[in-house]
Length: 178
Image 1 (tube, rainbow, N blue to C red):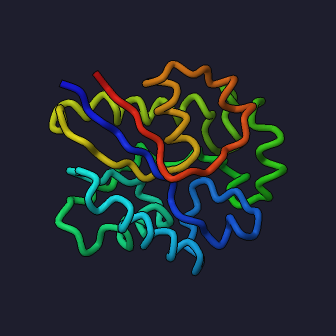
Image 2: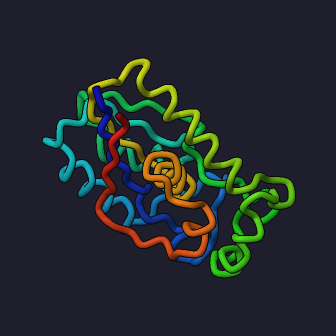
Image 3: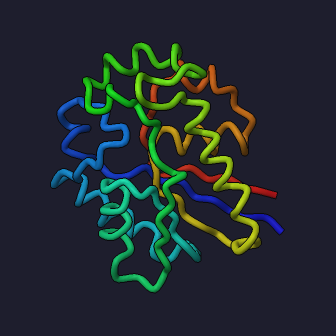
């Protein structure tokens, strides 16, 4: 049986609006982000979702809480779905950080981790999904590293290519694990 995985990014944060790369800092949803989270809940309420998995960083847990707080669908927090840890660069200007991210595919950020280490966490999460969620449709709320992990391990996308692309927001991505 297959697992259907729907991925949604956390909603817009104050840091996003200020052009900051939050990394492993908690982050807080902006007013716009809170409205996006409510829309996410409405958009997915009749979508057959049996569980929501979210990064344990505050911006992702807030997104899940606003979107699914009144729902009977279980919301499960998992640290493996976190963003890449930029170490001492957490919170720096996003444009500056992203300009050099190809250099950190395998080399950790100072005091942090590499992108490959971050997406390997996502792979461990994916490997555990069939233990309980085989044949189900689940929602994952995460970050750029989460989506890259899904694209890399499910769709076979090269990390080098993902790192060179701009992250374009959309209303969810669909994956299938056979």
